[in-house]
Length: 441
Ligand code: BGC
Image (cartoon, rainbow, N blue to C red):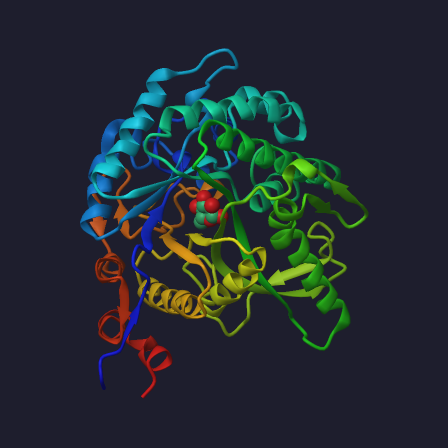
């Protein structure tokens, strides 16, 4: 067979994504620390040193990323480190972040920096977190402080990571702190997150004129389980509206569309210079009276799809194409700010990477303005309420010894990043089961 090469545009950003609480270790000033002390994490796991980035191991991990051809990295700043109490800015913490980000740029990697990735300082949580509108007034000075400190090196900012996941898990399903299951709180938090995003967007632009700011939203394809069934169709449409569309629509139009009302926030209109899409999987939805807590939607995977080790993610690469197709409606550049799978033995990951990058390439061939791809993640990290039970890294982490072991997927991803293309040869060597599907004949 002739060798086929699927090329990506010059300057395309290839990287991995991480978040502060998941990799730094020793974070004791945020609400996830309280959550862990309350024993709310699976197996009573604790982040401990995590990947020990706060202890300095970011250096060796950034070396790994750079040596593997990655030219970008998405990371986040921990609010509770920068502002451990309302009246104190920790300049040492800011210096630490400045050194890390300088470390990226001197290794030739473009930083994309997230300002809020699920965690809140304990003092913010005590005041009611995002249910309290006052949080926005505290978020803005923090954002200004960080942008001032890092603007020499950073141009791309993600205001809030996955406001849809954060709001749903913390206020509807109760898996994230504060563990609420309350619709009234959920809607209040969704509104305040839009306000917070908009205020952060304006603050970023005030401090740094040439910046590019947006949010990263988690996109999950949702299709009716029984295609012919009107209630399944309605539930899939409704869930997708609330979960996928709500936040980017609000940032696009300034309108927050709730089931029973529309709120207008003119200050939110046009507050995204790019849209970050975090895509992992897609699912089927059926109407079910038993699933009250999930607003009558039973969400499940297609029984034919391949599942990740703990059944958390179904391998549905075409869903990434759908996510990008959905994203272009906003008329702004797109970035895949997360995509990955938990797979300690690296059994599906090479196939997952090859097939998702193939879908990404398809989008690029439609001339969609897709600027980069960030794999989740570089080294195994602390997976929130699931603790250490899931392994998303291109490198395996031994938490005790802090030793990293390269997985085969890191080799595949390195070839893609270094050459800026996906070839049939790569697929043949790393994911032979995908060869016929991606390169027929
Ligand atoms: C989050 C990450 C998380 C990943 C895998 C995403 O929703 O942004 O923080 O680790 O999913 O669970």
